[in-house]
Amino acid sequence: MNHKNKNVLFTTNLKIKLPKIKEIVTHGKHDTLIFKGSYESVKAIVKKVRRTDDLKQKLRSTCYHDNEFAFLGWETDGEFDYYAFEECGVTLTEYVKNRMYMEMGETSLKIMCGLVDGVKHLHTKGLVYMNHNPQNVLVNDDDTVKNCGMGNGKFLHEET
Image 1 (tube, rainbow, N blue to C red):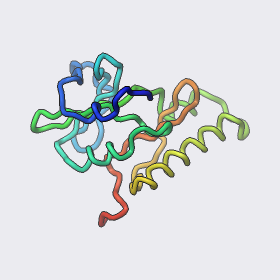
Image 2 (cartoon, one colour):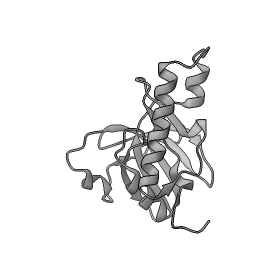
Image 3 (spheres, rainbow, N blue to C red):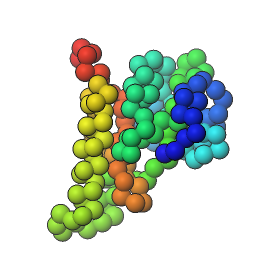
């Protein structure tokens, strides 16, 4: 994702358009809601979570890699934090259901390499991805893989 000034994306502002309840995509753990919304008029996925500070820090440190779900911005209402992410394709589960795999092909190798590259990037940032599953892997139309669901990630120096 190309951005003119990446630092601008991390300021608290009112650029996230919060959608109506009927636009909820899914419910996550711990009162998490995921909406389709926008960030500065760009289509985005908006995640609403109970207020925490370390999630924001984790997201900031994982940004800007081809195989990571791009973090666009953050806002809070005091009780909940709202995170805007790039809008991506379908989950890996949905992707596989829509295709017939008879053998390991070029597309399968591209997906596996993307998964490995994304996890490798997280490790270089000192993060361990604790929730890697097909629901937290997104595949775009061009078969680019994006890891998401970093809320349960741990810094390597954290105690578990």
